[in-house]
Length: 338
Ligand code: H2U
Image (tube, rainbow, N blue to C red):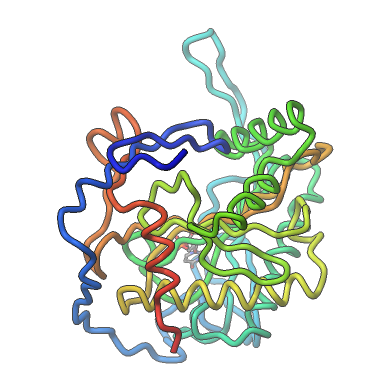
């Protein structure tokens, strides 16, 4: 059995949805198109940045003179610890209050740093901060799920280049996270194996979509990728939370995160925009059949300015892509690392 060379649909077993792949629409071969995008010089410190050390934030708060990572409560939090009053449920109109917490996590005091330029020990500090922030929120009595994520670049709605991510905690497990959990639990109930463990083992045999590996981690373009250069980062040992990672696994994750960012930035020679998310087990479950993983969803398609839009057919029907995940993995592997 081989992959169809023409139009076909691929199943995403984590979200139980399909992506339409139309490889024949790529009329021309890859040109490795690189635009000369003026890369604005970035200062190491920006007096106008609300994330730089010592600077003021909304509401009159001031950042400390931090030297590594720094996390704080989002001054414009989407959620608070106290649920609002009220709620309706008459079958068609359903609205329920939600409680939670929102944190902002600065990866470095340097305004001009990125996960591509920070050294591996500094990125290890970011890995530790992801884990610590998540655990601290999980301990709050009203928290049922924690989402570590990052939006990078103006294309993803973030105009502040200071390297940072966010952590949102909610009482309820959000819709997409709940689907990931349900799929993994169903696979485990049916097979006795964890879905991502089995999937990654098969990918390591095939090697078509693997971008890079370490003794502890596998980085690949998933078979069901929607975004052109979407990647999935999976630990070889089954853990369900960042906090369960051993020191060696954290170091090797830091190295691989750095490599991935250098590959992304090198692809179109531009600071690659993306949304990134860690998928940890919800609070209070058994974790059986689940495996920690991270997703990178980058929108760029052909160059620093040509992005993939999820519009029209995709809003109405299902996501569609022309570039195959196999070609995307090949192109990411081919990036020369400076
Ligand atoms: P982005 O990653 O989307 O740029 O988010 C940065 C967050 O920083 C955003 O959620 C918060 C915004 O609410 N913020 C503060 O908490 N304090 C400020 O003074 C400005 C921005």
